[in-house]
Length: 355
Image 1 (cartoon, rainbow, N blue to C red):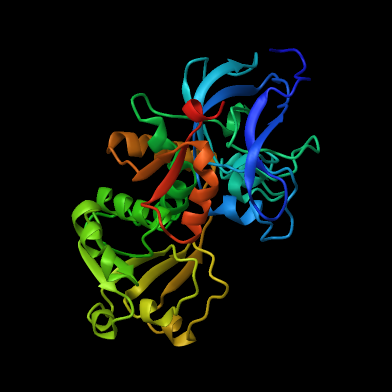
Image 2 (cartoon, one colour; image 1 turned 30 degrees about the vertical axis):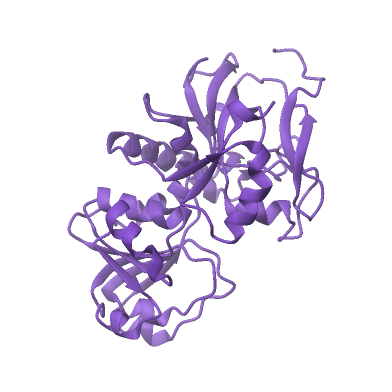
């Protein structure tokens, strides 16, 4: 396999235009370089980013577009310089596959903040000018630096969502020291990201409150996910009862929502971290200044913290709640994702359905 891959031997599903409709597609991956890992993909998580770029929401989609950046699989072959993994190992690939490797952030293995910009796993322009194609495919070739070891015994279908949904909340929780037992955490939104924030919060020993617009999610939030409190955010009395009671808030909601009511629930010195993408963020300066509060933002995480998160999940038996689907169902799954009709992450069974 060290010879040039001239045949289109990678099976995939791709979008051809902004309709976002995915259908079977074949293409060729690059040949294995000295630092590369080739992995056979077994599972790929379905992220809202897949909707955004297949439908050209940012007006920069490059078709044919193969989405997917929550990739897990089994190493098939490695280049001569690869020392971290070997054939047969279980590995993952997250939201980026390259970076400059020279800036201060890359040196600190925080490549997601690379000053030259990290190269996205799909719809990105790689250093050789090629357009990256993601995990809705049979295999991928990636530099060993961006390949994560999945701890032994950790199920691959559960590992996939950790590589975007999981790390998106784990990274800011670690950075802002939300891993202090006995502290209190509020989680806004109970989707793919929110349910992972709850699971991490409980593993860190936090008292976790879920904010939701839907009373219907209460029973599952408390009994299945193990949250300590459930608050309907549109209920003013419930919100007032939480005045200055929380140390931290993780805001995973991408729909537009008011911020002042949530800010009022933070203690003096409290921190709200935004990881969702509403169209605007608006709050009164008093919500920030009175109480010395902090509002921060975050996206995914670098290779160091991502590997750390995978080890943490294995050690504490933290598993995302998933719905495993065949790739032939992916168009319906994306529609359901848009309608928030999933608990809590779709994972495509690439190994058994992509033929």
